[in-house]
Length: 408
Length: 228
Image 1: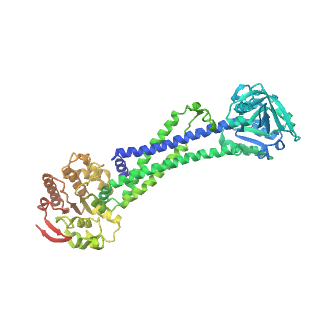
Image 2: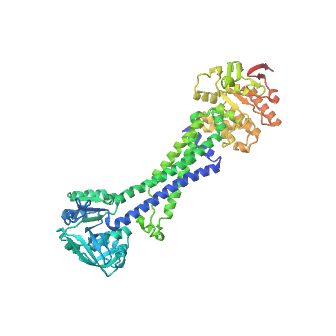
Image 3: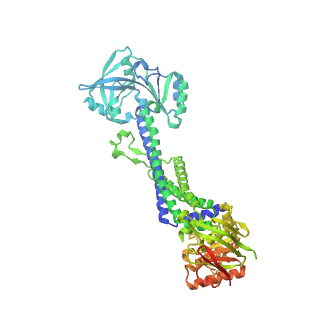
């Protein structure tokens, strides 16, 4: 304790012997940490927005299928409607909404073109609670009810088919008996999502589609939504227990690309952190080495007066602890202030089309993640102090007589 | 009187082979309790090297140095630090104060290392500063003191822990004649009044005038050792 009382004030004053150098180092450390925190918040918000936007289209947080459907989504891999046990599990707390759909691969044909699509038979009322498609109608209307035998198609698909609202398209799907069944549908609505989605999905009422392919009340999937992603694993476990013969999956296992993107987003933050840490390390080593070399004589003087080599090591290390600690504190305040300043959301609507590929919403909402404000500052502080041990070690090794000789 | 410093056959060689420089060539020397001795000689004669040996800052190539009867050979770096702290006071030519500490803090520094209680530390530091004529300047940083005042602070720091011997290497080299006289008078008075032993490396005749014992060095050897 006495050593701390001796060295801490000395270390603090030593920091301000060269204010410009100290301020530059503080700038490097604080801007580095600020950028890590800001990038982490931005990427986290972007990932969240992108994930939410994509999941809200069709996938939801999880789905239930017959075993084999995910590998081969054809008519032979459908499932019966949920039994009482599964409905009870779906209606319990933890699941905010769920919906049953029939989804089968098919072909759409206009007067000009024939294209492969996925035909989705839905219950429009339930879809409004779980999917964003009903709110993305840009022409016409969404489906009226499960009996509605009209079609809602994507904007880009309409362009490719050279069809339009009020015209008819032919949909062909393999039926239960193995024959190709075809029917004409009125296009009553056109939706605007991302291009790939628009090209793939055509929506109609679930019952007309079930009748068309002759599957009775069979469905292809139950999509469910949970309010908190953290609760998803528990919900999936409960559903698996309620429907042991079905395939219950969370979204990461349904859309592998999205799962990979979700993991990659975290990786980007760590790559950015690694780059910043290298820069900070170089800055800290440079500063502390200069500070040590400039004070070679002084270390010799202190050693001559009775300072031990470990005191020199501790003194230089204290200086690093204070310097980096102060930089980290400033960086944390700046990071939190930035996120707080942008808490009303970053409006990206001007870049709407350019950002469509990223599937993010028009507004990003940044949030302070408390864990980030513990892990990143501690990591930078610890690394800074560790790299500064080298200059401290060099200072410790300076022989008093050599140090005194250098100055005279 | 018993010797505070005892040097026997001290040799110091820097470098090796053809580049070897023999800085000290078999020095035998005793500095007695209460001595006010000057160590003189031309540049390169070995004054500073000898002071470094006596100050436990450097090891001789051969021979033995003992401080207060305690041989230095075989002592660890940490033990040598303790010995310097407890028994030796240093006054250097220049750059000899810690610039971020005030005059009082510079003097207190040695007492802090000795773990003296804060109140006692402050009392002794202020007393030492008053003794060298710096009453009222305790809070000033070195940059706000003249060269002479800085050297007085260094003297106060060297004396505050009541060392067995004070080693001074060219303490007046950067000072004007008036300040030099004041400082030499001060060191001499402290030697007379407190009985503290001084060994002063110098080629300044104004310092030598006061010495009770004059050691002349040349080419790494003691050429003469006279008491006046």
